Length: 164
Image 1 (cartoon, rainbow, N blue to C red):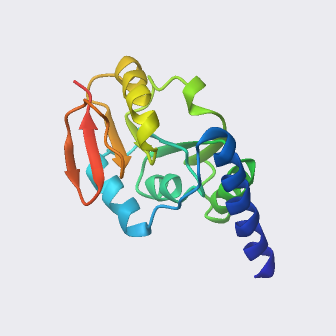
Image 2: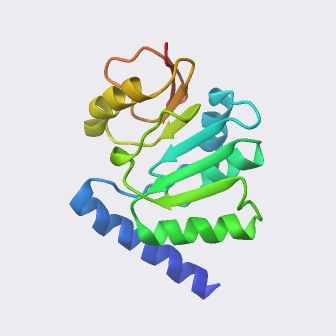
């Protein structure tokens, strides 16, 4: 148990230090909000979902349990390691995958659903990137921070956008 506590401390400290340089702080999404985000996504079995800034992997793992082919992009190597460990423990290696990548350099055209817990100052640039790359009908779910000009619906601090 002490081992897992140490890993969590390292991940939090690593996320804090990474946030100083990149603006990307690790803030875990509560399980109730993960459930709300996935419900709003209305994905169908086999659709491809990506969580950008996937943190500890909880959303990716839950989406995979619900039938999505789930991916995560994460900058913090300690969180990538922790997420991969949780995926292995859940025996979800075929359905869930976390990559140590910067999402700004990834192509989102193959994804049906994108989830994000961003921060206000990136949302304008991210909105432009996703509008350019996603196919019509793609859903984007944002936790807490809305996109500046994309019209969508909200429920309990979660925003749903559907690309035209």
